[in-house]
Image 1 (cartoon, chains in turn cyan, yellow):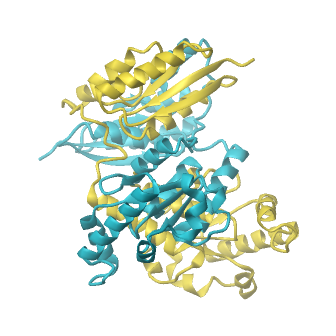
Image 2: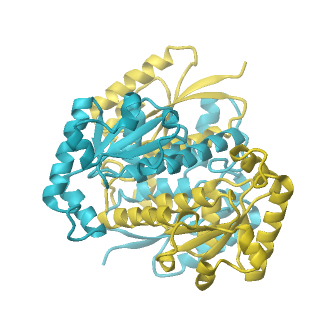
Image 3: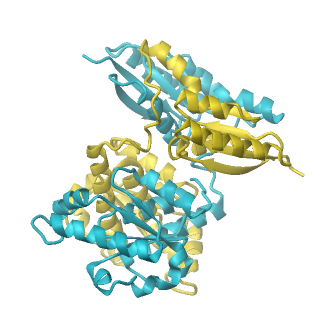
Length: 274
Length: 274
C-alpha cells in the first residue's frame, strides 16, 4: 500500500499560490498519495489557532505527520501554525530574510496581497479583457476586433475558447477567437473579418486523432467528428496558416497554461498576472 | 527617486507559480519599483545558459543586481542559472531537502509538472467545466442546470461572469450564472428555472455606488445605470436572497480569486487546482 499523508495549504489569502507550489513540489514524490486540504483566509491569530487544532486532529489519525504548505505573511499568525505537529513548509517566510538583505530594505510584514489588494486600474483592465474575450468568442462579433491583443484561429475544438478565457482572466489580455471552417478552406482565403489583423493572428492546431475523440463526444456519428474529416480539416487549416504566415502551436499535449504562455511569449505581449 | 530592481521569474514550465509567489513577496517591499521579466520553459542546460546571459546583461545595467525567482526543478539547469550575478531566490529547490527528510522518500528531480503533465481525466473535467460555464453564462440556457456545482445569482454587473469562468478554469467547477432582473423583484419570486436548485444557489451583491460606476461606463445616461435604480435593484436583490435563504458575498472590494475561494469553501466544493 502506498504511503499516505495529509497535506494542508494554509494562507492568509486564497491559498491558490500555496496550493500551486505545494502541488508542484508533491509531484516530485511519486508513489505517495496525498489527501489535500486548503485552509484559506487564515488572517488572524484566532483563526491560526483554529487552523492549528485542525492540523493537530489530523496528526492523530492514520496518515501520520501532516505536511503544511504555508504562504502566511504575518509572523504572529505563522508562528501559531508552525507550532502544529507537522512538517511546516514555509513558502513565504523563508525568503523574506534573504530579500531584505539583498535589497537592503525592511519588509512590511503585512497580510499577503496577491489575489487581493484591488488596484482599481488593474481590475478594470482585467474585467475589460474578460468582457472582450467573451464578446469575441468563436467569431461572435467582428466589432472592435482591432482592439484585440491577439486573435486565435483554428478549427472547431482546437482549444481556442479555453485559451482565450485564460489569457483574459489570468493575464489581462484581450483575446478574441475565430473559427476556421470548411468554407474558408474551399475559398482558400482567411475569413474576411481577419484580413486586416494579420499581426494579431495566432493559430492553434491539434492532432487529428485527438480532434476526432473530442468531436465524437459532442456529436457522435457525425461528419463533423469523422476521422477522415478531422484529418482533412486539420491539414487544410495548417496549409492555410502556413500560406498566410500565421504562427501556430499544437495544443494536443499541452495545458491551457502552456499554450497561453507560448502565445504571450511569441507575440511579445506584456504579461500581467492576477 | 525610488530604488529600482529588475526581477526575473525563471521556470522550466510556464512561470506562473514563480510569478505569483514572487509578486506576492515583492509587495512586502513598498516604495521600491521592479521591472519584471518572465522566462518560461527553461528546461535544458542550453536554455539555462541563454537565461544566464540575459540576467548577466541586465546586471551590468543601471538597476543594479537583479533578483531571480526560480521554480526550476532540474538541479543541473538550476545550478547554471544560480551562477548569475543576481540574488537567486530558490522557490522550489529550497524545500525538496526538507520534504525528502520529512517523507523519508527521495524525490524524482524531474521537470516541473504543475501546469503540464496532462492527466487526461483531469483535463476532460476542466474542459467540461469551461464548456458548461460558457453555455450557462447569464442565464443563456436552462438545460442541464441540475449538473451545475454552483449557480451564481445577482443583479447585472455584480461579477457573476468572471467568477463563473474563474471557478471553471482554475478549479474545474461547473458554475452557471443567472441574472436577477426587475421582473423577478416585482414577482417577488426566484426565476422559475432556479426553484429546483436552491442548494446550489449562491449570491453576489455589490455596493450600489460601485454598480452605478460600472453600469455607467457601459450605458451612460441610462435608467440601467441611474444611481437610484442601482440602489433599488441591489436592495431588492438582497431582500429576495435573504427571504429565499440564499447565502451571498459582497463583491465590491474583492478579487475574483477571493470571491471564488469563498464560494468553494461555503458550498464545500472540492477544490482541484490547475
